[in-house]
Length: 300
Length: 323
Image (tube, rainbow over all chains, first blue to last red; front, side, top):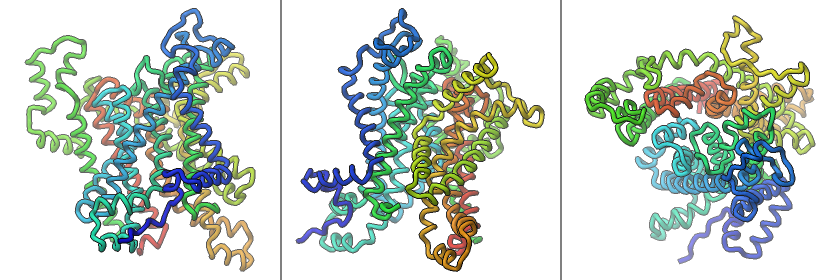
């Protein structure tokens, strides 16, 4: 029996198997999307910093040096030191690790849960679809940071709880977008053909529906990483997210940044630049990915 | 139109009931006994009789269903109970802080609209020009920049400039005075936070305006309007912008969530005693009655703002009204 091939997003599938066509697709993307390439470079720089923090950071992110408090940028401390004498560059490099762990965990878990729920809701429809839609409506009635604060009020701060608090609001947002794409695909003849061939629900969903919603899903995933990094930074800034002594960009802006704004402005400037550049990178890359994957937007 | 309004209004009811159930259950997931936490906050073991009294006081001795009914009924009557932290009625705590938050929210929305619509339109009209690139980068930067960092930077800028101009640093006041009593004092409190929150709000709306304008400018009726000799100003203002603003209206409603989130964080930066700061204090102080009231109030506001926007959209767009 001939399996009916999905008709969309061949680039993604190619990239997954790493064929020469995939390499040319990547090169084509880099050539056609200069802003997206800038975004990708920013993201990669931050990701490498986070991954290689143990080798890149010249000092421990947690060791205090009371002889070098609020020191301006110099050769010894290229981004200066904070009010406890901790090297800002080292804390930013380790902060990248925290940001990426939170960002990717939230985006992956929230995204995949949303993907499963969205496709299932569209494919099965009926009462299950209606129930999932109403649950989505309820969760989406909570602004992200408000629901995250409510979850933290119950479970407390810390990296794991922050990931949980940010992931929950992301699930229905992903499910909603995936569902609308999957609803259109459900009506396409090859799904009927697959049903007529006697394929099971799991095979139809995984082989025929999921690959066809991958384009909006991947775009959303990049947006989610940026959103999660921003939300984590906000929660940590409020003192309700990642707790000391873990290095986190939002946490670095808490307390000292405002207090020493006029005497040691570097404490306020560098962590903020790190957050903004990373989220900026994800936004640029996500936009370019959307333009590349959605033919309707290519000319826009 | 009536059918559309009825359907949309009816959809609000299950959403609000679901949200109330979620908030109610979430607050019951708190590990340990809420009364033991409340009474033993000093680290000491609480008296069991005091804990029992607290259970009766908070209605925790009743079944979970009755507790939910009590919570929902209290909310309908705007009786949110008393704050576990200050002992004052929650409604009173919120009412005292609402004016400044509402003022900042309104100002931020005005700032957002004033920035987003003209710049988004110009960006679309001058597509791929340097103006377009600058506006697009400014918009993405607005989305990427955390509002609390922008707040800190604006404080830093005010300190530096005031020092440069007047020889001494100046900080915006934090004590709230209504606008009609002292407009200058009032605006000096609200202006910077509104600008900080409004920039992000504007960034999202600016992208939407640009995208909607680009779509509309390619429509046949725009070509027809130009072909029949209408001047460009009329084509843009009367035909293009009017239609392009429809999705922007919806977005302004959806992005209301950003506004609320922005307020929570920005009030902290500027030390403003508003509802956003109260929320953070409620979470920090483990004040569950205050937290659940604030979460529910936010959800109700968010749901009704979206309902209003949807109804407005239906009124503005006949395709939805009669669809």
